[in-house]
Every structure is written in structure tokens, then in C-alpha cells.
Image (tube, rainbow, N blue to C red; front, side):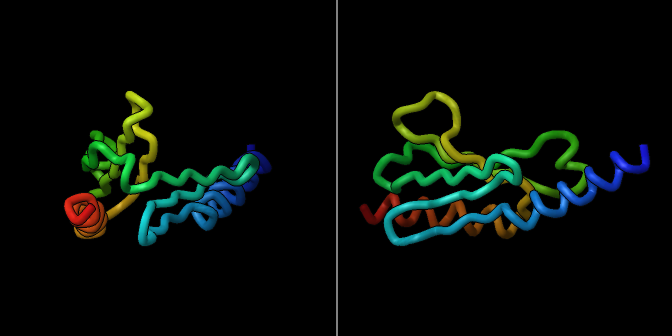
Amino acid sequence: IVVSLIVNLVILRKAYLRKGYALREHDITYRSGVIFPTTTTVPFSRIQQVSIRQNPVSKFFGLYAIDVVNGAQTLSALAIHGLTKEKADGIKNVITQRLNND
């Protein structure tokens, strides 16, 4: 049990360090994963909806998630978890302003 706890903590730390997002001029990119890293890029021209959500567990810790939905999928194409309210509102505002400018 102790070995599995140590392995879990090491993987959890690496997963935290690997996660990241970038708001670039024409798209938003999100990177995650330790064993199987993935990078998801969604161009602003494809974004249809941006929403902020919070489930009961994240509400307890005061964290939020942003869901970005594009035209090709019914589920969110991109979800950024573990954000503060200010950071989530800021990202949503940047995305909606760029959508309104295009």
C-alpha cells in the first residue's frame, strides 16, 4: 500500500506539471497526460460555446472548469479543470472577445 501511495503521488505531481493551456492568436491549446500525453487545439473559428461549470467536489475546494464546445462535436472539445473563479472568468472573457471580433 505504501509503494502504491508513493507511485500515485509521483504520477499525480507529474500530471499536474504536464497540464497547461495557451490562448494564442487564432486558437486555444490544452495539454495533459503523463503516460499518454495529449494536446488538443481548437481554432476560435470553430468554437460555438464557452461555459464555466462547477461540480459539488470542486465547489468544496472553490475550483471551476471551462468547457469549450466546437461545431463538430456534441460534447466539449476542450475542458480545462482546476481554475479559480477569476482565472476562469478571464479565460472565458478573452475567448468571447476574440469570437466577437471575428
